[in-house]
Length: 499
Image (cartoon, rainbow, N blue to C red):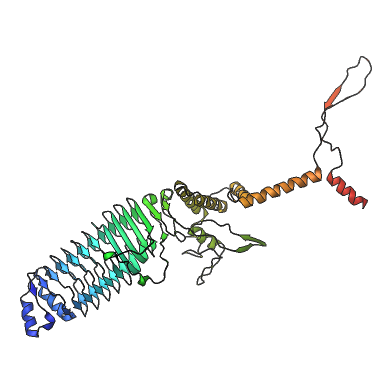
């Protein structure tokens, strides 16, 4: 390949200085397998610095297999053609802030043992980080990817941040493994993309998808607060580990012994009309603030939280909570109203789970808001033919209306309380059977105490005998029911008097 080639580490000072004087801004360089100290890298970049911009400008750059044993600062460097760092090793911090990669940027199998920064970097060509290893934090804040982006088999031990990044032509993001957080807050995806991510947390707050997207996830707690979905977006749990190059399963050791399931914990501010959730855990998800929840698609094994288990006491009456699907916001409201779980204590399965504002009731959504949430999600489940789940949400809606002292009139709340006590809003067969049995017992008791008439009374006509020629006045009336035999109460009372 044309360009300047030299193993700088093996040159004496005079030869190294002579080589550096031959370099000019925009020159091609080839320093494969070269060990760089901080000072040596600084001298190399200074030799390539453009006087007009005061920033290094390099043509084609080859750093394959190079080792950077000190801090590596490539800030504001322009790579006019391809730049290859395949299998390079950075043992200290590496900084590529505001770097421009006009061609291919290759970091395949590169090892970053400390933090690395690509903030504000522009990748005009393809960005390839296949099987790269990031031991420290990785920062791509505000980076712009105008071509394909590939992280197949990349491993991030700690956090990776793509906040405010722009993906203009990315078809794939991943598969990658991250032991910490993958932050895509305020990122923008311009084209259809498939994201394959195994991560402890996936932050998608105010992320914008201007085309369809498929999020195939593992291990992740997902925050979608304020995300903008202009086209269908699917969030699905992947049952088996992702495979990297060569169809080899990716190692997920950095995630420890965590549950491989996917938990969506926030949908506030999301327009759910274009959102589909498959096989995800919604037991801690906050829905308040989301719109078009009645159009949210929930497929597969989608789970919600449950009421506290075991018995509890209301005054002197022992009660158990009815088993049903509940929203996390109902847990937060009930935990606040009963003043349970003081801060600093681990919540118990026998208690309602407190919310982020516990024990402050004012910012906690109340029954009126929760009733609307249950109503919209009930319709979403009905449209998905999930009748048992829809029935649970109907129960939750009625419960919230029964407790709503501001939006529900007292007469309606009284009827709801009766409906709840008699049959569990028509959904609890055992309670309805118990109410029917009680009604039958009361009816039998009334019959035994007061009895029933054997026949209907006949009309009777009464009058007075008058002298001949005088007008006759007759009155016809129906007498009161009379028992043909003493009633049970009379017999009981009479028997008691005889004794």
